[in-house]
Image 1: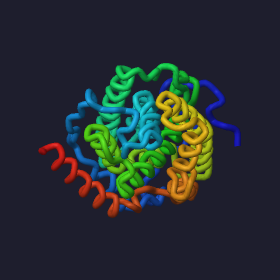
Image 2: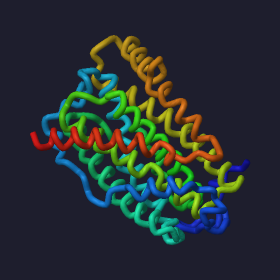
Image 3: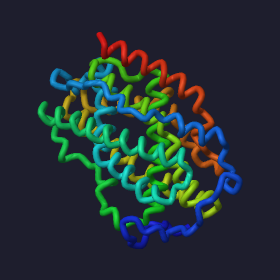
Length: 308
């Protein structure tokens, strides 16, 4: 299949895949999936984060490898969240389901908060001497008009799934633990990613469609996103580690390789969720019950920590 992003389009020109919006009977969207988006909270739950005393080199479990992996992830969120917002808003006028429309508004609010908070996170890193501007986040820097809105939305659906999968693993395994502000930031962010994980896909299904062309667009975008994102994440991760070398370079990079690809490693743990995305029937709403319980438990801990 030729990548649909090969031609230029207007900012919100929907001509890439001209399938009409479909009703529930046509799409096969289960009612439980629609109820899942209805449960996205309609309030701003941000606790206060103060990074003035954070030590970014080893804030996570005292481990530079675990710390800089999440620091490297944070680099993508200020621009990435804005990209996701724009991609979804381009189709919001075509969403006729009021539940999804309400979920889109909350999605936009939450993602804007994430973008702003990670911008503050990175500004604090710069104040500690990290050369953030030299690192590579170009996958979100291309002019929005250079790819079709449908392709951008498909990219967003893929990235939202990958982010939600990482968020679930982060909360279940407790792989972020240490500095109070940074730990709370990542737990807060992970909860909200799980809350709105279905929104981009619901918009995609209702506007781009659920047929074969829409499926292959979604798959192609996921492959392209992975191809672009993983090398950049790895390079940024390595650059941040090099800034704070405490072990011989080879030893440090071997530890990082094990952290990413070992058993269990970040990507090996996420592999089943990545593979699940390629099912034609994929929808994250099927896990809403267990995710809701996880969110509630973490939110309770966040509230206790914030009150202390």
